[in-house]
Image 1 (cartoon, rainbow, N blue to C red):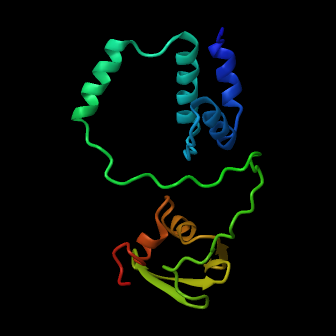
Image 2: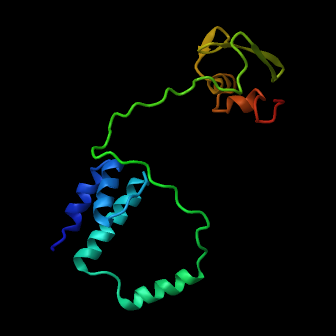
Image 3: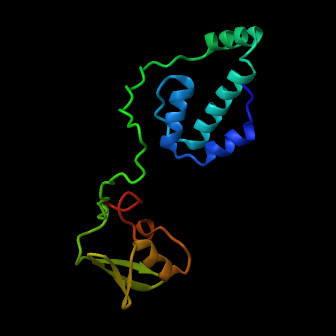
Length: 166
């Protein structure tokens, strides 16, 4: 079989990770749960080349066995694979992400902090933060407006696990 590596590589790069897992299963005859596109492409291309041009030499195979004897072995068995659908789902339903951060106080709370001799007050809203008449989407955006540089909002206001009492 004549293998055009460049052509095969361009085809694989256009595939989604789900399609690559199907190709992996076709190439290796076993399942793979990896979603790492580059890793899957490298493995598939290597296997296609090995099938087309020949596998490892007996000397190389012997050396890998020697190296494997010195390697640490996996102590836990791999998890069983999830069922794979025949057609990849491109538009799978996603769980709604929780927008509330458990480090934030309840809406209506006023966060205060002394900064450069000034007492700052930030009002926690249901959809953001109010400071000096403006509404900001994140606490970090408020901290950036105050300091003029990107700053972690939790760190700046000494909240959550960033040095403040929890």
